[in-house]
Image (cartoon, rainbow over all chains, first blue to last red; front, side, top):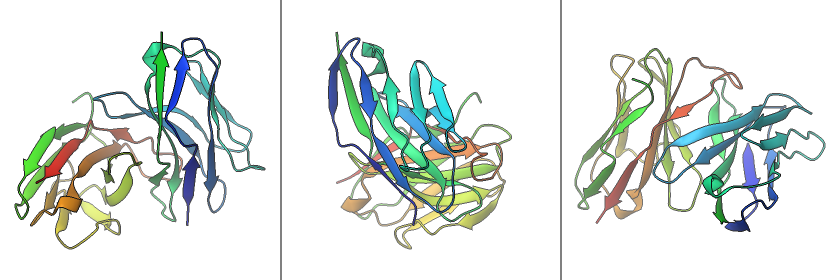
Length: 114
Length: 116
């Protein structure tokens, strides 16, 4: 079945450091891919998405490229801020359904220090 | 409302007690999902509604879990005879339409259930 594997955390960085959070997936076909972010005390929010191979999703300085060859969708940001501290989830819709129930990775906790 | 609203935000239950968790989706959203998020894990699918029809309940962990959406808007997740392993955050999400890759799911802040 569909699955998502994220790099283990937590990740601790200093402000302005470069961020990479790895995500690989197993799926039938070529689904859309999502990154969701969960700030403390808040619900999951869609951060970015890519709908087909070689697409690059971007938002708030974050980027992720849909790599079919390596079945990956790694999240990157060139210069993190304290306000980026949150939990990040890679996700793909489908799970064998037509309505797109989401399969999530286990999440990566990011802490950014001033 | 402006977003998905869940209530209560926190619920403490004694083992064996029944609980009901409420979800108010974004107005006009056809699809509604429930997920369970254990501590330190990603959310896991529980059940899906399209309007008032429950089309998939394959993720419900036992027959103690029951969900409904009688008028195609507000949904309630009910857990009977709660057990300690039911302790988790229960997330509700809604989307405007159904369709793989088309539906952006908007999440509520969740209900944190603690069973003592």
